[in-house]
Image (cartoon, one colour):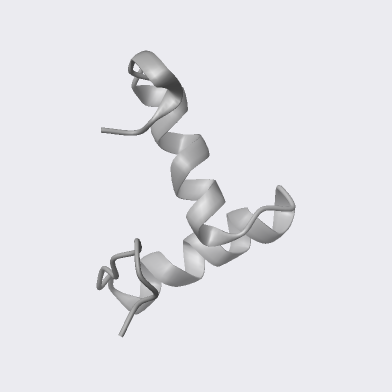
Length: 51
């Protein structure tokens, strides 16, 4: 069960491995890496929250 304010997602093991490798190389956690990737692809909405 995720902490309050968090959700969990299920990804294939191969994708998790790729994310972990990239996160390690960029000194980020997987959640921070996903947030960073989304910000690179999509502009941040007003207020800085991810929609």
